[in-house]
Length: 94
Image 1 (cartoon, rainbow, N blue to C red):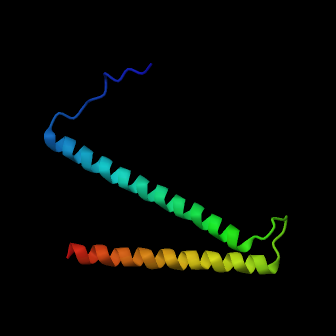
Image 2: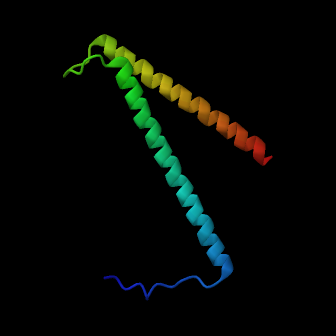
Image 3: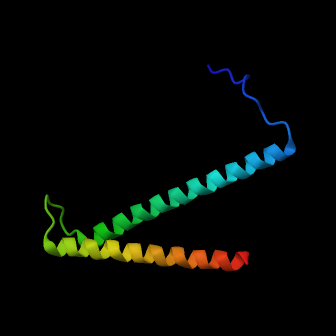
């Protein structure tokens, strides 16, 4: 069992505030990562359902074109949403 008694705990209030702010930032980053992974998973499901009629060892040209189009729409949509949120954040901070 690990002995944690040797770790120094911050004693000042300002240090605790910095630690709390950093922890909140890290949590927000991890939440964004999880949300992005969920979006990618959802996107994979949508494109699979839309483009794959029957799984096989090779993609025919129609299936490949469908997947390419689906991926491009996903990227375009993600960029548009990201840009819109960025604009909203920038307007909110000025």
